[in-house]
Image 1 (cartoon, rainbow, N blue to C red):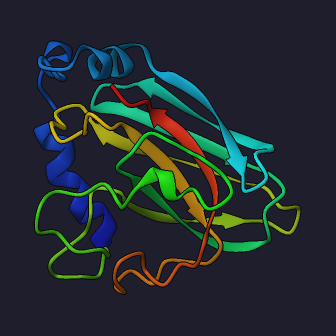
Image 2 (image 1 turned 180 degrees about the vertical axis):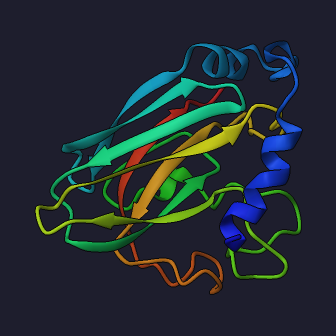
Length: 178
């Protein structure tokens, strides 16, 4: 069993409650988990280069994203702790979404961050797509929202604070600030 899958098993099992247990304290997030979202993915110039779509699933919110026009190769994908995407550097998206005390990296014994997602493979045509799960039970979604950020390089799974993944080159607001 891969380490990444092994990390997801406890999350999936913990998310087996009823849809009503999503986020009793935050109606905004509850609505997103119940109804989903659609958001444009923009590049550093503010141009739309793809989209992110969240759809309700049995275990939580399934976030599918697709991009075009990126450099071929592997690109780090992280969820950041602020639902803002102000180009060109997307610094407004804040640091990685994470529980207190966790360190970056799926290969880090003190990690991973909640926002450490797998690298995205972009083909020779500049296109890439995949999906990930935010478990239903997740109670640590910040009032500041969440942004999906793509980096110029791949994530090495260990280096602090962002896996030696280079500048932020694309961003989508998944959950806007309260």
